[in-house]
Image 1 (cartoon, one colour):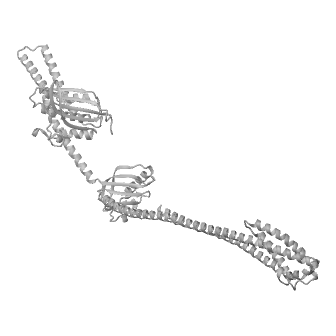
Image 2 (spheres, rainbow, N blue to C red):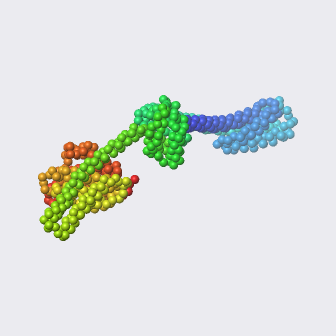
Image 3 (cartoon, rainbow, N blue to C red):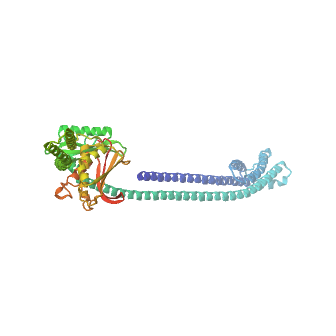
Length: 612
């Protein structure tokens, strides 16, 4: 932009200079023309004056010289010449001159009439001057010849007097004209010089201004150029830094044009492809890479779809064959690459080697399966204990009933009413035991897929499994359930409830206080919507601050040899990974029935509607 400005200003400087020179030339031309016109004017005055003087001399010579005929002709010619010159004269006093000249012309006319008289032809006038002839003929003054010569002499003398008057007028005219013309010439020269000086100074000023602007622009241009060089250096350094940063990223980064040609890569993908320098890979397509043809076709198809749709493809798991022939598993993300006009000019991609991650996931899955199995076995142990508690009363009832029947039979006191009543009691006890077995068998069934289930019913099932422990240790369960339906794995969720309830029961049964409470609450959340919040808390004193952050760690337990440290870990896995929810624990202080309470509170947030 500055270059165009400098070019324009230089062009304007040139135009101003040319315009100034043309203007000065025009002023000089007009001034010189005016001076020439003034000189021509004074020259006409001088020429007219000279022709007048010539005429005056010729008029005087008519009286004093011989060769009268020749003098007469010269006199007439000078009169004609002066008359013509006088017509050309342009002065302020021309009217005065014309007035005198018109009088003189009348006298000249009379002189010409006298010269044309025949009486003068009888004498030879070329031998003597006219004045001499007048004196000689004075003795014959009554003659016609004398009268004619005397009249002629008188008229010529009068003409000479008129010419003297004209001469004086000419002197005044010349003086005035000369002064006027000199003044005009001076003014013209002064004005011309002033204008030329003004124009020159104006040109110099304008050129100086524009030159100053050019200097400023050049300085700005130099500064801009310096800044540009600095920015280019910074860009170069930034490019190097960016390339170093890209090269240091433990993932393959690449970008291609719309024809699937690589435009840029980092060291990671160079190593995958078996190249040492970028230049070896840039310009090549996926078909020229070491990957298999079917892999290259998939990569190219993905690139084409991204370019055509303008939508990114993220987290694509695929296989990639390296230069050494080994196949790795990668996770790839690609986005459209756009220019400043928001036009798609290619794609930008990144992939990471997840082969080790996949192996670790397999190992972790196996570990989780083992932990799940251990959790099931631990739960089985607890369930067997619960079954023993659940069957203790009906077994005692069956034993006492059968013993009573036996004794009555031995003493022959067994009647039908007692027998039927005893059999009914035994049947009821067996059915109770059978129902208990069904409940426990249902608990160990594996959920095939998430489904909707009623939260309150699930809570009742879990409480049924531990009801003997709750009853034996005088633990009161307080329910406040408003949210009903949950979407997830029902049996796994029962396992979570069982783990939390078992921990509360374990701590509460050690409490000396007779006031033992477990609270179960649920409500629907407004934010985030379509979620249910479940709170389970007790008054067992809470969890120590030093260990509260570790309760969900695998194999962490506060039960010593009695615990496995798997229950709460599996509960977190089930809620977070299987049911897309969240579980956390904190200590809570509250008042219930005017009793100050403190205990651990488990908060579970899970979806109430279907999730992917």
